[in-house]
Length: 284
Image (cartoon, rainbow, N blue to C red; front, side, top):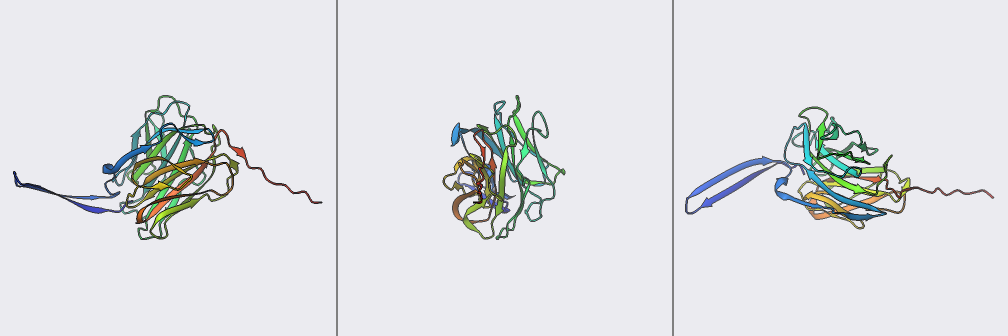
């Protein structure tokens, strides 16, 4: 989704004989013009888990230090945050910096926990050959008075296309929130993706949560049984579903046309999560 392009805009007025030529270089395919802000709204995802709402922010900006968005969750609710960044304007260098998440009270915000393998280093071997860094964080109980969230690059002016989302939840676990996670990137351009957890889940009744992106900003459709959580602009998708079983978990999504893609998946414990029962066999 970091493909740079040149955009030509012509305007012809027959009455004033006025001609405008605008040439603009932009990565991320002018996402600010494609903001759909399609989000959950007190939506049930199963096992007593409800998504209250969410927001996201991204853009064409390169060599940044921070990116912020306005969002005011209720104190005590859980917040799931996801983010990605490139190292350069063409996303061809492997990121060596890291990112943290904070808010208007604390930067970084200590209540956030990273998923086991965050940050993920995701490298496409398809035509785009983009190299990205992805994160999933969870704050089990957000403090009172939060009105704004910010992601910060560990080295000033060293993160490009910083993009992130926050969503508000009830029904999640209140401590040790992560079970397993996984990530992936395209090896060929295609119209769908598939990502699995890197190891089996150790708990049942987890919430599976995703963060996906494709290069051409094609609107994504989550594969059943996953439901959309947030797609604040086309091609940036958070989806989720509560699962009853443990073991390896796989998620999919699809779009129109062949494209590069990358994404991450995390199993987040809910209030209903229970340790997986391990079968024992007694010798005769």
